Image 1 (spheres, rainbow, N blue to C red):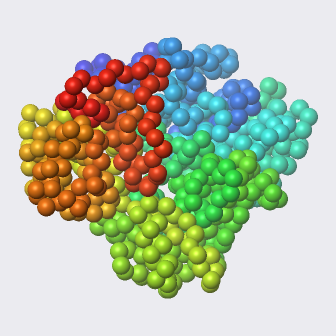
Image 2: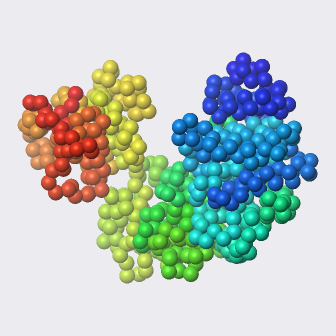
Image 3: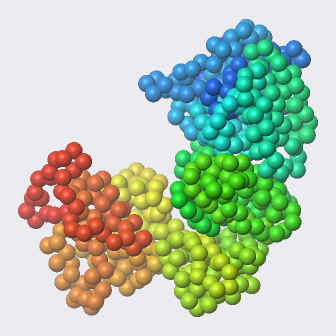
Amino acid sequence: MNPATKIDLAAVLNRSRPALARAITLLENDRPGAAELMAELAPRCGRAHVVGVTGAPGAGKSTLINALIGAFTKRGRSVAVVAVDPSSPISGGSILGDRLRMDEHGSRDDVFIRSVSSRGHLGGLSKTTGRVIDVFDAVGYDVVIVETVGAGQSEVEIRHFADTNIVVCPPGLGDDVQAIKAGIIEIADLLVVNKADLPQAERTVLDLTTATQLRHRADWKVKVLKTVATSGEGVATLVDAIGEHAAATGIGKRVKHPSPPAPLPQAGEGSVAQASDDELFAQLRRWRAAGKGVALATVVKTWGSSPRPDGSHLAVEAGGAFVGSVSGGCIEGAVIGEAQAAIADGQPRLLEFGVSDERAWEVGLACGGRVQVFVERVNDERIERLLAERAAKHAVTVVTRLADGAQALVAGDGVVGELQLTPAQREEVRRRLRSDKSGALESSEGALFARCYAQAPRMIIVGAVHITQALAPMAAMAGFEVVVIDPRRAFATAERLPGVTVTTEWPDEALARLGLDAQTAVVTLSHDPKLDDPALIAALQSQAFYIGALGSSRTHAKRVARLTEAGLADAISRIHAPVGLDLGGRSPAEIAVSVLAQVIQVRYAIAPLPGPLPASGARGNTPSPAPAGEGRGEGK
């Protein structure tokens, strides 16, 4: 018995059902000792063949898994099943209980079936699925089958956990066939049309076979199979195909999860994980370091309701692995195939998908818009140069001529590359970079596309007050790098501002060290002229895109007098005071919302709404007048 985990490890390794159940519960709830247990089990992982089963609701996944259990055990293989169910909004527990559908195998010594709750986790799994798989792997089950929630198009996270991925499709899906093609077909190693004794099964097989032709994989050709799980028809063939895939691609290469994985980021309402620019190019670098060819796909034009904006990236390696998104999952399969072709022949290509395009039915651009995607093979120099500029905190733009892929990298006043830009085009690039808006450039020599890589905007807050405690995390969530300055050590503590960079320097010293550029917003909230004024003086002498100061109109009038005396009369109009949009809020959190909203408005140069906003709140209540001497932004 391990005293840290209170779990009998020997019993777990001997597949004692009670011990296994307790171990999984400990891991699911991340109780004390979970990490220690995984540390003991991790060295034993890597032998099981993990099979992921996903697909649309009603496809018959559970029934098919029930048949697979029988087929595997007849061949002398032990099987564990992780059935991920939707969670109850009340208890948080599993509400479908797939074990009931597989109960005929539940008493076998060589079978263990466990339902786990998704607990609101996106991607079709629970956040601890990887740990549960590792437990079954470590204790020696030959095959671990993972059934996803089956709640729709976001069922792609399984690709990180399984050696072989099966996508189950019922016949006659109609428009839902498009959702399968669009969202999850790119993860499939095997496509299974279950309930193949029903009408339209052959049509669904044909549809899916056609869709697989758009995928190009060096290690495996995706197979489309038919089964009737209730009778067992086709199940033996499916088991054979699972074995063939394992022989062709290997097992045990999945990511092990000694700690719970973070949820995959979602690309809008789509199914493909989206990555930041830095994450995406770092992944390109890792692929290149491993000797793999890579390509980059970029959205260069959209019409209608396309789900991803201009400049969205999808990075692809030669084997078909990818990161990023150029749609909500609608066209990724086709784009990945074209990217692999670009890696092979070195030729860029400009693709267009839309509802009026015959290819749209094949790739499923169900969103109703049109999108143009530029695909190019990427070399080490491009990756390293861009990452170096980003590491140096330089905002850069890559301009591409879509006809032939010629490029220029613009950083500051410098331009590097074979593509020549006119002075007017350079100025347009700078304008786009300031607003972080990628898009087309006017040109008489063919279409040009400017992809902007702006540095993350920075918000420097003076005064670690209550408003700051709300504003700092909000700004960080909005993509700002946040620094809080307050020499009062009782205010500037990690306990009051967890996860925020805090300095106890005096504002003028801190701002001199940090530097203020055109990507910086300065917000003074201390309500103390000894702190706020030096910060405002430094900000007014810089290129900071936003300067805001807490205080009523009367307080600001006194501030104006002091700054005028300091010789800054011509620059004082840059200060937003009282700070924030007039939303009628009073609490620190409400004021923080108004400040962040105004900063974002100024950053994107959005014109304010004409006239004051209504004073009434969301519930129709009208705030009482401010006490004498106070106004909006006059906080403590």
